[in-house]
Length: 95
Image (tube, rainbow, N blue to C red; front, side, top):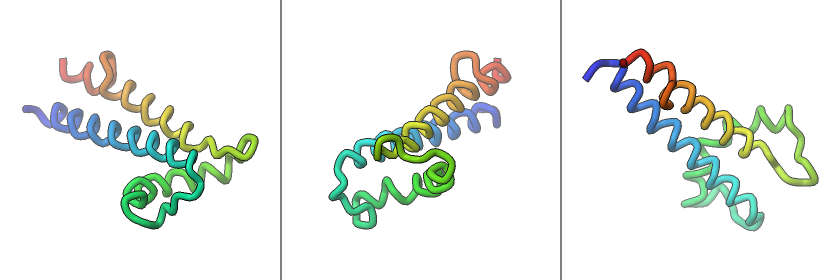
């Protein structure tokens, strides 16, 4: 295995996990009574909150709904496709 293959594999898993965590975060917004500081919900809140805090300063809630997790799902999906997708940068360098 080359270093690009390993980096591509690790990056794919990392970006996939972050996308999944943001999707869980979107679902958790449907339940405002959930305390994100308690387990197991803090496992979703802890890695996503550093991304959401600065984004919330730029993008206000629309109709009282926090859309910042949706924005980050899009960003991570785009990054994954651009880097390791079928015609991604790392994929093209491996071939």
